[in-house]
Image 1: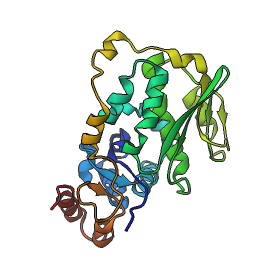
Image 2 (image 1 turned 30 degrees about the vertical axis):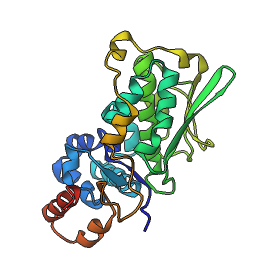
Image 3 (image 1 turned 180 degrees about the vertical axis):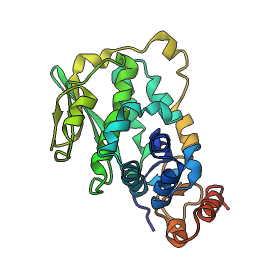
Image 4 (image 1 turned 135 degrees about the vertical axis):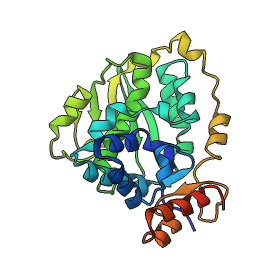
Length: 271
C-alpha cells in the first residue's frame, strides 16, 4: 500500500519552538497530538512525516497560539539551515544560482511530492515551489512558510536586507492580507499561477563568501545517508522512520499522550 505525500520532519524547522514560546508547552503538546506527531520532535527531527500531519500541526499551532496567518509570523525565522545535510549542501554552493539548482535537484530527498524549479526570462527570474497537499485548509500558512524557507537561501548570498521584486502566492487573499507585504517588504501577487518569488536574474551570479565555502564539504551522499535514501513509499517500508497520520496514530489516538509517545518512539527505533 502506498503512503500519502511525505516530507522530512526537519520541515518543522523553528515552528514547534515558536508555538512553545508563544502559547506554552500544553498547547504545543496539543498541536503535536492533533497531528499524531511524537513530542520528541521538539528536539529531534529524524525520519519523515506525512504532509497532512505537517499541515495539521500548522493549523493547530495557529489555533493554539490564537494567531491569524501564523505562517507570516514565523516565515522570517524559517531557514534551510535547519534542514541538516540537505540545507548544508544547498548553502555550500558557490553561487546563488547553483544553490537554487541544488535545492531543486535534491528536493526528492526532502519530500515525496514537493518540487521546486528556477525560471528565467530576460532580466527577470522566478523560483517556484509546489507543495503536494495544496487542498489542505492550512495551505496559506504552508505557503507563507515555504516562501520564508527559500528566501533564506537568497539571503545567505545577498544579505538579510535583500528583498525580492515580488512574492507570488497561488491562493486567494487571506483575512489580514496586508500583513503579507509588511512581512516580505515587497509587492505580493495573490492567486498567482504558482507559489514563488520573482527577482532580478543578475542576482543568480551572487557568490558565497570564502568563509562560507570553506565549510562546504557536504555531498548528495551525505543527504542520502541522513535521509535514509529518501521518503518511504510503502507502509511495508520498515527501513525508514515515519510518523503522523499513520497506523500508529489511528490506532492509538485515544491513548494518553505519553503512551502514544512511547509507542511512536518504539516505532521510530524500529521496534
